[in-house]
Image (cartoon, rainbow, N blue to C red; front, side):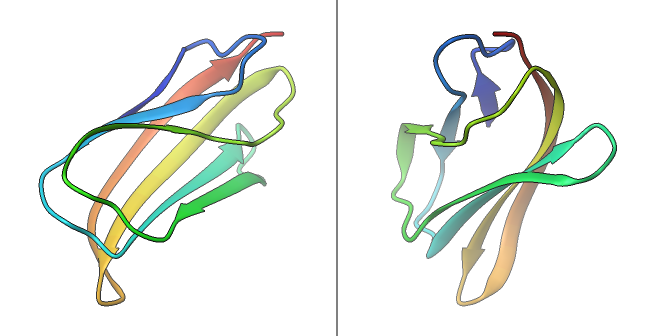
Length: 88
């Protein structure tokens, strides 16, 4: 999983990921470099395959960290963290 384009410019960030199994929920949490929550995005269901999820989050210029989690039956099954930049 990754957020692209990196750096994000005039268009918003897009989460690209390959899912190997069905999950009940996908969440993306975005934080500023200082650790403050800058955004949250959720999809109620995730199907297997390659997918792109546009994150409808308005972010200003800066460096951001993200945490992606997929859950089944209320339990986190996989997590991925990373960093991306926004330059407008």
